[in-house]
Length: 106
Image 1 (tube, helix red, strand yellow):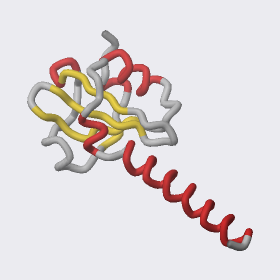
Image 2 (cartoon, one colour):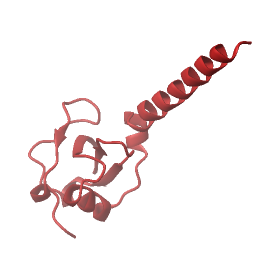
Image 3 (spheres, one colour):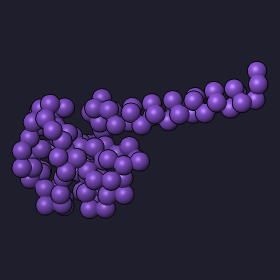
Image 4 (cartoon, helix red, strand yellow):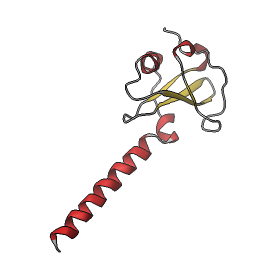
């Protein structure tokens, strides 16, 4: 095989792997498996190194959040510990940005 064909194939493979990692870590299935940690959610909203934190829904007693950025941040905490303006079933509504006043320090 010629060198230019090998280089193109390697580039396509790297792009495919990178794209699947980004899509996979921001999927709702990935977010739903987040460990419960109120403090990490509070820190993510306070200092959003991975981008803004979005509420993506609730199921039962828990609410789920996703950080939008280059990092695959995901959070889960009890809905009763938060001051959310509105809730909706997990993955069914339009995600909204979470602010610091919605997540009291525990």
